[in-house]
Length: 382
Ligand SMILES: Cc1ncc(COP(=O)(O)O)c(C=O)c1O
View (cartoon, helix red, strand yellow):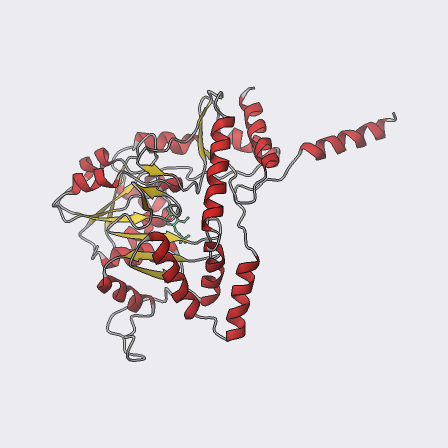
């Protein structure tokens, strides 16, 4: 064989094994397209009948009486804290392992964020550490359903008993998970979720607030629409925002929720296969599901022991495998939160140093997943 032919064959071989696998891949199907088409045919694109339908569907799925659709999860967090009456003299406890929006929602109220550590197995807010952080000023606690599983809400309720402290469930990653048989996002005194493009179920951008309190739901609807009196156009009894979701976004989400069971069982299968594939790999800590939880598997986070996480991420990238680092540092290390820093949350710190979230999406094939498992095992065997 000539040299160039050998090079050509080598290239073919390498092409064959090289894949391009993203960490997340939204699945937008025919139903979404048909729903959007209906909006155009009906001539109604802003908030209207599709938003109402989406709220009704989510009420069923989450077993929440009054879901309120909004344009993002961040808007939902902001609104939830306003409904709870959080203000400048209050403290709000959030996990050290927090997304920036969770913390920002506290700063929007000019309240003080206080950081509590996470449980080393579920990576969600640890009630024992929360108990140490409660003061007379604590007004609310925001447990995050990290990766798709819940904090121990009963333990959180126990340590806050009789103190008038509200639990705001940040269920942005929580859809599909359950706590003691109840759907996530509906476990807290008030809850929220996000339908951002990377989430398990998407409206492209979007969010929702969940409450069982009729008055809070009414106020939320007034607030999301510029504080306008629903009975009298251009009468604004309170200062609100434009936090509305459009019917186009709701139409997409309605398509997504049509395949709720299918999507969740596929993600659960993928998570199971990962855990099986990495069973013998001592350099990896795979996720643990608490006995009281059903995992929603928004993320499959592994901790790399004894290796430099960023180098592992880079090696995976070179092999065509996308990953996500959620999140690369505890929130109190982010600039806007540094003034509120008091002490390290050691479990959160260790987690953020070592975490890699592996590819997980509805259409992921067995070949793609085997490639991820084999490539990562190879990297960690060096
Ligand atoms: C834990 C958490 N809270 C809140 C949000 C904010 O949601 P959105 O991007 O829809 O504003 C996210 C988004 O990823 C999140 O992960």
